[in-house]
Length: 291
Length: 320
Image (tube, one colour):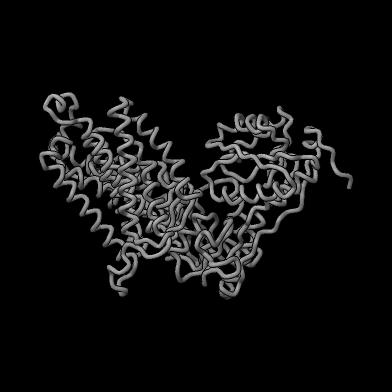
């Protein structure tokens, strides 16, 4: 049972990343690889704050701020230096590798001291359940906040500038500044994801962020397949946010199933890929038969 | 019945895949014979980590626990993913009686996830930094194992023994790897002690190695003492080749690199270190408390010289 709770916690931490990637990849239409660096930055922030005896909540806030700053740099490179989205992300990500190392003073740093759940959950509840509850509340809270924000006039402008930059500019939306803002938010969430993951796993590692963009997009796509839809139009805002979270959870649960199967440890990634394929193919084929 | 249903539907190709998969899974699942269960977790596959693992299994066998006969070993390889590592260790915590592991990341994950079962580690440079101990002599109650601080000082002595006039020694290093700072400091101190200098050129992938060696040479380095690094290990062949072209003698802290053409090495045989830990695990399985077994350091192998390389680099060997 503990194993499944642990998988859910990992899934929730990844869910925060997927929400960030949803913002950059689906809302801003920007393949932003900065997250590979900001995920680690978030982990580093929470480890550093914990080493100095600070509260894990402070670590989480610091992670968001550091991530948002890096996201704004990528956005700035794109918006004002006219550097293409991929290159801008690659540049920031590359720089972040050194910055993260410098901040940690090494490649690996343990997270010590109290956890996010400490003091929130009575001691009678097991640690895993407590962490799962707090992480779930955080992810749902962020998803609901995003939903509310994206439905305001400003939020509509964010979405419009992702859909069609030229038209948004013509409509008087400060479209480039908007992109910078959305990227900052997206990377803030990615960093929070790194912080949640490091807080639970107990350490920050320089390599932990590598592959974050792929993981995030992967979770998003799995989630989008898992949600039943009518017709071929794009998913609604709510469905998109739900897809990000569900996809991340599903991915981690499938990894756990693969682990549980007890096969040769080297086959783990292959079996995970096959399970993901089956999970997304079955609803799709069923849908085709009904049509 | 289910198979027939699946086959009839349009899901046929996937149903088929699922059946094959199920067969594969059930075939692979370890048969339970009521043997004691031991887990072994590693972060990813590298030559070093694999050597530690096979050493561990050997040590267990020497201690009387042969895989498949008198013990059942479950392996976890997280394939370089921290989340998977955490899940894998958690799974072991639920399934087995003792968690063996190698690498710092795996130890950190286990310290969090495994609270009431013994942990026996190897391949860790600093158990205190990993959170498994408060000092080298006092590990957490359920932890014991073998740690291997790299013999940097012994390495510098080795270079001076074979090249008595050397002043500038250098290494390539990937600053993204664990314990770089620590080893770098030791090397600097050891060089400063005889009035020499230690130079580091950083590389971030094995593609940078050739340029890195040239850069060491241009900075006036007279000998390379390669500090252990996974990134550089991947390109050791290229490094030795370039060093040969530049007539820059290269020394190692990994005895297994002698066959790659380095002049000499002192170091830790990782397989032996794994074996040492495996024997400790066997003692724990026989009923000893981990707290009663002090942590050990891996044994340093004596200086080994590859005469052919020494000649190539023009180094006169000390008379025995």
